[in-house]
Length: 261
Length: 291
Image (cartoon, rainbow over all chains, first blue to last red):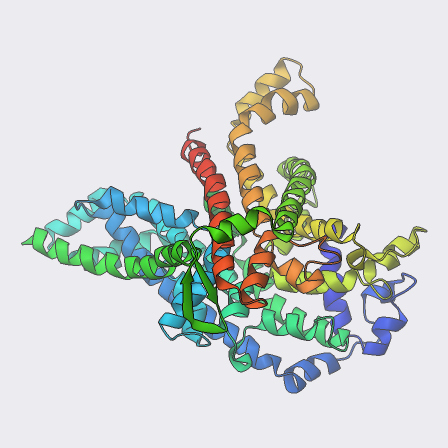
């Protein structure tokens, strides 16, 4: 347990240390190597006001919010059609969705970069979330949930004269809340933690996400300011840990179903 | 009338998803397949020269590419061999619901939700020869300071350790799901027959969990093949290419050497490898929910 927790303790502890204290207590190992003896908020002030990490943090929030809302909308609509409506070619189209789920992003990142060039979207916020909102695993996850909503409810609603849209909005969605929360959580984590794609597609540092910003100021050629790195990393990690601890069971559910982290 | 309206609803509901899938999932495959047959450079975007399968031929004798594949396979294999037994043990431990296992659970899962880039940055500092935490801990038990990421023998194992730290929670989760699917009665029957705890695990849990374990193996393999941020942030493939991995090599060819055509060809090969592994996963997934 200690093995898993120590890097976090070190990161959060050192975020509150002065640069001098970090190095003074690095060796040999004492409790002060991990925890701050004289806690200070200087590092947080330095990364927020000096390095403008607040802006990057805000970028993450903007991108994650857009990605969560749009992913949910697009996936829920498609999943509803696949789960509840009959139409020719349905199985073939769903097969395409499953095939898309097999395509690894790491193999398509370079051509995807070209697509963003064709669409003239490079270095925009759209580039950061647009490619991921038609999420094949999201469609799969929600379709499974929608299939479990009893048909009787729907038939009763049809007799009462409800439209498909009303059934979707008033019956199927509310009854699938756990699956929707699972998808919100997975999408948020995925969006918040992304690194490789923003690194490639975002050249405008003021719109860059926090992970890339932190990695760039911790690069070997930079002057080592460990306090800044710890403080910024702590800031970037608090939202995911908080949300994860609050919604742990939905995370477990999502991972067990899809293997997506 | 309803049928007509349903037609409109279907079109309305499916269009956004398929526009997205088409543009951002399928179109890139075609661009990669086509582009891999051309000489393309990011510096001269208008120039395209058709060269057929030359990139694929180059790949066969490309030492760096071979090295990157070998490193990726070693990374994946080593990670599997350590991470899976560890995860199985931890999953069994958590399943016992002893006091303290809830805390253990959270501690194991926290790394899986942490950004891989942040993990790489922090572990990069932990591995620092002078002020890094790991040498302090080693010093406390009397081991000489090590150079870790700057040593060509230690860099890859160091990256593997980070990978295990980060992904064990994920495999524990999946194994826990499998464990909880095994009916309690089986264990009670085994106990009545006088089986010891270890015998129950060996003859009952492991065989019943075979599919879940296989799924975990495939998933871990796919994840491991995608390793990138650790390499980019901690070592940039060095020292002496000892941590050069396939995805990082593709990234480097495209964005450092700007050799786009070759990067496309590499991407096609990676895609083929990963889709092959994923199809295997699909077969397992289809049968996974049976019991």
